[in-house]
Length: 263
Image (cartoon, rainbow, N blue to C red; front, side):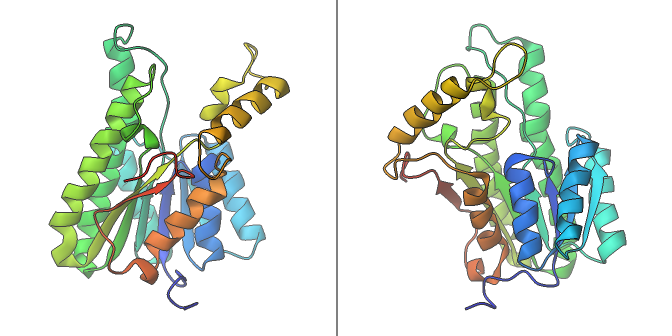
């Protein structure tokens, strides 16, 4: 069973690896045996993730990447292959949030979110799938959200992009099955990250401890497991989908949300 859940001697690319779920996934993949290329638009935080992996005895590379630029995503994957020889796992985790109602949303808001959260994932899927099809193996893991199942006001751009990624995941899974390339997605519930900290940040960017506690407590009560998620909860699902334990799993949306949404 230990062999099923390992990714030893594999090479993983993780976008959004500089913080939150991306960082936790990069660390978990490394701890499970993979060499990891940590991509993020925040170069400093990507380097910190790389250092954490290397300090723990793993192999890693940090790369600055804006996933909304196709050429930069291509360069990221090229660097992984150049440095480590192959590409086995592609984790499209980078994403941004925008808060507005449907009526308030400007074209520029929609374009910015779709560029990163949808087109960025599309580029990662397309370029990684092309490489993996040549070797007839690989695992692509996309990050969606419980927002695809439970509509919420004020996040229309984010929710639309994530719903589109869910459909992209299923379509690509059908197309890549003949190449033995698996494509799945993880749909987190509420997880305490920099993205969700907007719920308890003050105007100066600092965290209001009382508001944070109130938000975490309130969100936790909504889940049957009576808690919110941590990045490591999501990283466990990422490692599972990357490993041979999920060798017969493709086209699935794994909902890691404490039971808030059940499909």
